Image (cartoon, rainbow, N blue to C red; front, side):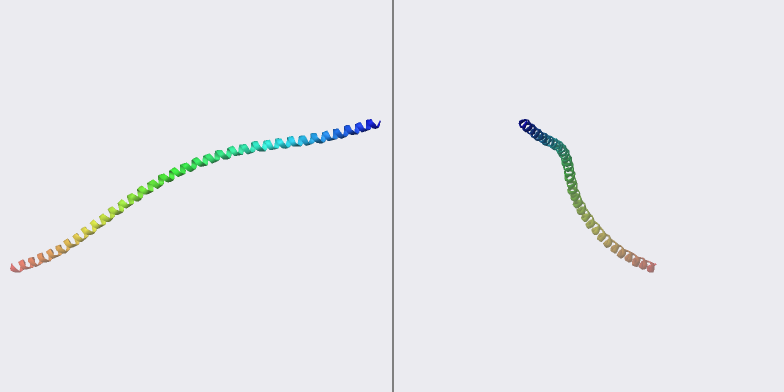
Length: 127
């Protein structure tokens, strides 16, 4: 009877140990499943981030191309501005020269008017 009792106790101990091992195994399997799910989620997030990164790179390239185009346009406009400034300067010089010439001719005209008035006065006195 003692042997049967001992055998029962051994069986119970073994069953208890087996139950604990099964519970531990189930917990580890559940933990592994959660980790796999987490890994899948992280991989999905990685793909999403890589796609967003590629979109941002493309946008950056487009912005860089636009920036280069605008810089090129700006240089062209600066050159045109320099050309126009030179043209304005030449026009101003020409205008100043014409203004000076006009002033001289006005002075000459005043002189001619005075002389004609004197000649008219002289002619009137003779008549």
